[in-house]
Length: 327
Image (cartoon, rainbow, N blue to C red; front, top):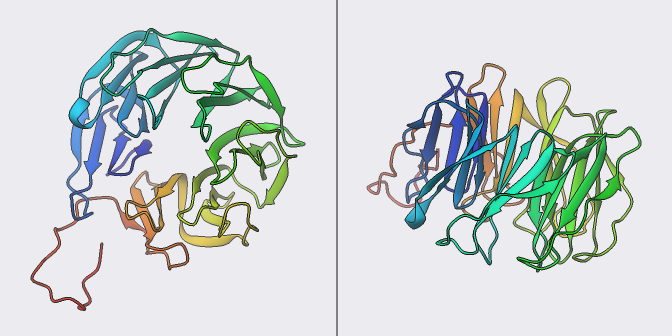
């Protein structure tokens, strides 16, 4: 499968190909990948947020498909240059969009509720990212003149704060990524204009922000994830198109050294694996082919990069203890 954009989830990966067609590949119950299936045409972007998949059509209109037992779809007149989907554990999904540098959101009070009307969050903002505050509501981050700005709900369904600036690394920020840390608050990572990755964090939810701290190395794209052991992991594509990563073995722990994964890629995404014990990385190589690599434990070895495509079902006739393994 060749694609220009991917949106991974725990049990499925969506991809937009060069003909503006949207595709999906899903995991079977045994963890193996099924066949790629075409979903729709005329799609320019896709975002995956747990129970909801959001797209922007080639006409600029935003659509959402809710997965599982609530598999209803909605298409709005809202146009967008960026989209983002956020899963909120206590309520329904939230869709964020940027239209002419103004942020907007639509959400659900519960998975079965209707979508709300679009609410303006103001701006200007671009490069949006969002995360749920531990024990609180959603927080939206973005870029404004190479500074990072944010606004949030202190409690779910509460009022939104005004936009606040977090500043930026010394050279200014050109990309932002956000996650949370076990036992703490939110963590913001930024790619500086100097090509280095920096981060700042909150010791507790809604606490003050620690100073920007450099992670070293050079990158042109990067992704972040929580690790099963409670720390954080950063994966970066360097100037030579190779993937490097470093991680914490525990929350607020020391960062390990940068390590390298083989291969050359132009885009990547990372998440905890469906087994909940390791990490899985999805990447698009320089020829636009989708690959993935994973490890089944936080300290285990990484698999070789493999094309993301149909995998044969597990042969239950293979005796336990044989050399058969996940592919």
